[in-house]
Length: 304
Image (cartoon, rainbow, N blue to C red; front, side, top):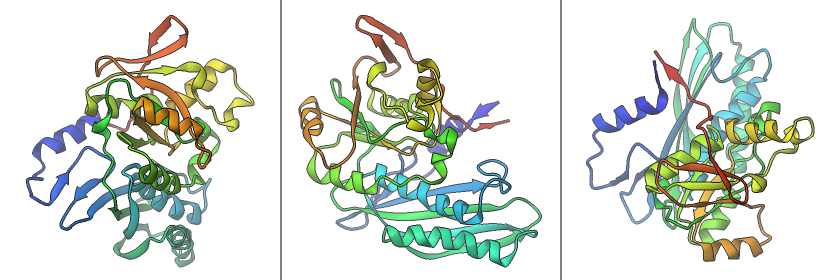
């Protein structure tokens, strides 16, 4: 049995991205297409009933909203602004017209909030589950922020508390586009990713791409109030590191910029660690002088 990251590595090897206008292909939060002076960002995500959501627990409006929100989060992670979206639906024969209107109402409402134009898509009916796929374009008006820019000694920051998805945060989260715009317009951001699979997993995309390890400070990890109230510290940390779909921005900056960020009051930020060591070293400082390996406990889809 293999998991999704192994499949992504395989596709990266066989995909033809040899083009003068493709700066970044498979491997980051967005592809980077640069046909002109501005870099164009491309991303897509798919939601499938029974895999990503349960129609007995969620409204069609919530599903539509999230289908776009996860794409907006990818654009934010690259330091971009969204522009257009294509929406494709695999519609079960059991769904009503009103169900689909509700789904699109949820999606369009979020699109309007973030100046994103839904420009097309495709629909088909079938006997299977509801499938929602959104493909988005964005523009990196300054430069795209990649996972590969972290350097030895960089400070690691996150834009908000972690671990809230267990109580439903992932269905109502706000894509961190405002935070991304503020950060990239005022500071030199070295690397960035949105936390979709869990902190312990997503940091490894940065360490692998940047060829440098990291050490987190256990006591600096911000934990969502949604889980902090009812759990012991060890369980809180487990959720903070392992729960997927926090959709906060995880990024690195130089120590000097890190000091500046700690003084700003425009957006919520937490300094949680430092980039150092070999790329395969993802560590956790539990107290001064005690550092342990941090397991990769984030979410992974598996394929047979």
